[in-house]
Image 1 (tube, rainbow over the protein chains, first blue to last red):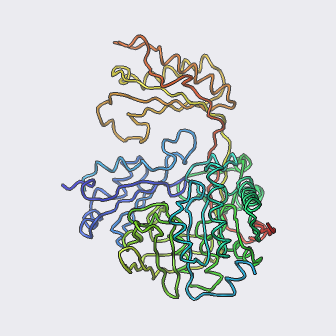
Image 2 (tube, rainbow over the protein chains, first blue to last red; image 1 turned 45 degrees about the vertical axis):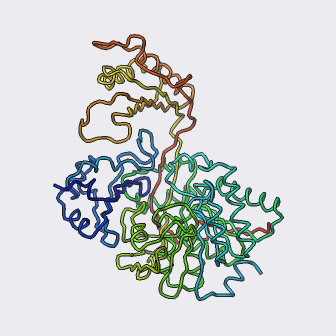
Image 3 (cartoon, helix red, strand yellow; image 1 turned 180 degrees about the vertical axis):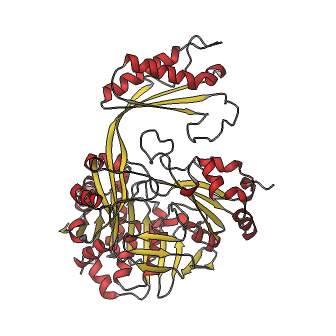
Length: 101
Length: 457
């Protein structure tokens, strides 16, 4: 089974404002993008389980123009509030690295 | 004739927009800026702010950037714009764009002008929101959290050290009416800095907003990305992008991919003045390092909205920095932290919060599973937030000493459980803040909310 880490060229996270975490998966070719876009491992349900949030709060948007998939979900702690672990949200991609497509 | 008056009179059919900085104050790369100036841009824009660095700057009134480097960058762009006699547009002054940030930025500009003998018309736009205005929106049910969850009460609004509204293009249009040379805005949309002038000149708003959305980050839209100045050339039905560093290539893929950056939705962007959609945008290579973009759409807002940001003080922070290389202590660490917290709370009375972070285990990510085998070393950061600095430090000091000497079954390291990198290992970190407001609010009275002031420097 192809692994996400071997298929994608970029796997990154960043805040989209202090309340939202955004995850970007970018692929080198149309074929790689299509494979990922159709993968049962990248549904809102599976990603919600990975990040411990409700599936209703996870939005997955394929973006063919850039061979990319965007995921948006609420941050468990508002950026920079007491108890936050990652103010910029730039290291929250790590749970994605173990995904098999 | 002022730079704005002269540009509005010239009405160029093709507009060259130079984005000098995506966040002014960290050091604008000189060489690319000089390259951009040689291309004789019609105006220069710089963003100065962001919510990325967290609530501390809006809360404290301080800039995230150093005063020395901020002044250096301001001097660079002021000199460039005055030498060309073109408008200079700055937004989100001083990181967070509240009154202290805007005032500090304006003072730096006045001081640079005096030192360098520059004279110009300086327009400034304030973005501070009256708490009662925001409270009335809350009571009317018109305050909506932007993404995520952030419940807000009237008490939360009153607890904010600063409350700002993020302006769109309208306040910039009123500033342009005053025919200045330089416009400095408090908290503003990155796009408004770059969109206001082409909007005034009658360029198609879909292309204008799409161009503004991309150039505000300078060369981040390139391959490889970077912080060098970016030139956009806006024509009748499209715009062209080119980095002012020859090593950075704006390719159709790199530019299209930029739509993803720091956005919840890659194809639809809601701004105060309307919504930009880029799902039908076309990206065509002009050569190896320039891309032409067209085809976005723009739907003007039926009623304008602005984002309101507020930062509240939550207390004073102390931090303990320590580490361990003992495998048995690492295995017992979570339980020991709970025990030591109980001991600390019994010995140091008062109301405070303790947040331990165990780097090597889960200091960065709240992993959904137990996962990996324990690492060789773990860094222990203990954050304490209390109503006063003395109490926060007292709790951190007691926590440190008990964690150092806490016994546990099969303990080998009876000399001490922790390695301290230096002393004191517990540090006073000063005021701690939180974003208490990050909400969208419909507004009509822009003139009252975002007043414009003109002065001769």
